[in-house]
Amino acid sequence: MTTAAVMSLPITSDLEIAGVRQAVREAAVAAGFSLVEQTKVVTAASELARNTLVHGGGGRLEITMLERPQGKGIRLRFRDEGPGIADVETALSDGYTTGHGLGLGLGGARRLVQEFAIDTGPGRGTTVTVTAWPRGARRV
Amino acid sequence: MTVAESSGAAAVAEFLRARREQLAQQWADLALFRAVYTSGRDIAVNAAHGLVDALTEVARDGRMDDVTVPALDQVRALLAQVIAARSQAGAGPLQVAGEVAELKRPVIAMVGRELADVNRGAALIAATDLMGTVRLVGMEISLSDEGAIVARQRQQLSEIATPVLKLWDRVVAVPLIGTLDSARTQVVMETLLEAIVDERATVAILDITGVPLVDTVVAQHLMKTALAVRLMGARCVVSGIRPQIAQTIVQLGIDLGDITTRATLADALEWALAQVGTSVGRA
Ligand SMILES: Nc1ncnc2c1ncn2[C@@H]1O[C@H](COP(=O)(O)OP(=O)(O)OP(=O)(O)O)[C@@H](O)[C@H]1O
Ligand SMILES: [Mg+2]
View 1 (cartoon, rainbow over the protein chains, first blue to last red):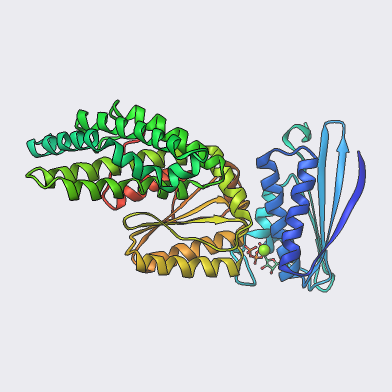
View 2: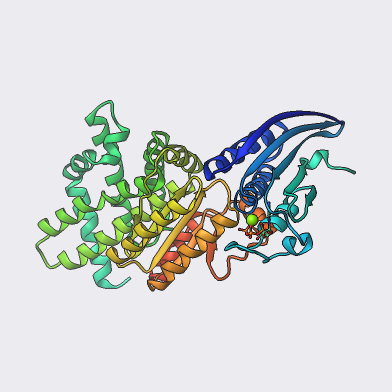
């Protein structure tokens, strides 16, 4: 699998979250995602970027284009230096929120992509890495 | 058909035949014809003649409020041409629907003025039914025109204002375009609630055809707006839920609860008309 980091975007305001959605949409189009696949990965990115801003106090997104024999994919890494999450399982469960949200963003984002990893802990900040492949390029 | 109905229809048929020229002249000056036939007024008048003649046939047939009669085929074909031209020029379906609705006024005014005899009441009712049918046919055409929807999205992407449109008596609609953030939602909600009061609306349609994605925040905004509409005593229907949006909503795990939803604006309008007691046949 070959990779090339294409860009790194700041997430410090609502406007930048809109920029994240735009950039992820463009990456998904470049990787040959269908409209449904684009919408899914952009929605996941929108949720994760908002978590980075609202719960993590701001951070960055790094977009990487992936390529393997079956096709292209995209990897999104959201990183913040915020308070971190003490209990990841609980945070992932539907309806759990420490704010005023629906508590669906984190778990929903995991369902919208093919690979999902989270590295976090109290005082360590949070890094969420997701990978999306179009249907034709998923593992057999 | 009752005797009064058939005599009303016959009076309208005779009226349209006799007043063919005057009506075509008046229609040619309306936005619908003027905007399409820009190369000359006589061409617009000519097109209007065609529509008067087609409507005369419908009136002769006598079934004024039935959108399925074969006599309407010619009306449908003529309107389809004009509407296609309007949507190519960037007019959205709701604007076009408004322009089609304008065709009614000159007809009713002339019938009211000129038919002084015993048939006047029945003829007015028949003419109103006929022009209502024309309006429905026009809506059916412009809403089913996919190109029009795309053109509307493109056109309104750049617009910040959120228009609330009166689609029908007691039915209002907001076409939402672009990302629905909190500030935007607040504006939409305020203008919509005002319109519900002003228009004494009982149904509000939130059309999200132009919203590129529904995440948890957008969903919350929609639910809040729908709740506010309900608190005003009106019913709310969300339309324009495209397949990719439906799938994403499901995977996110969002429960839209008891909000009524429809795939297209046309479906939502049909539902709305049923709520306000007007039934529509779909071609
Ligand atoms: N980057 C982060 N840093 C710290 N805490 C986080 C982060 N992301 C998520 N969390 C915690 O996990 C919880 C669940 O997140 P999730 O995105 O599912 O719901 P939410 O953001 O509260 O609401 P919404 O449904 O609007 O997304 C959050 O309430 C928060 O406590
Ligand atoms: Mg969230």
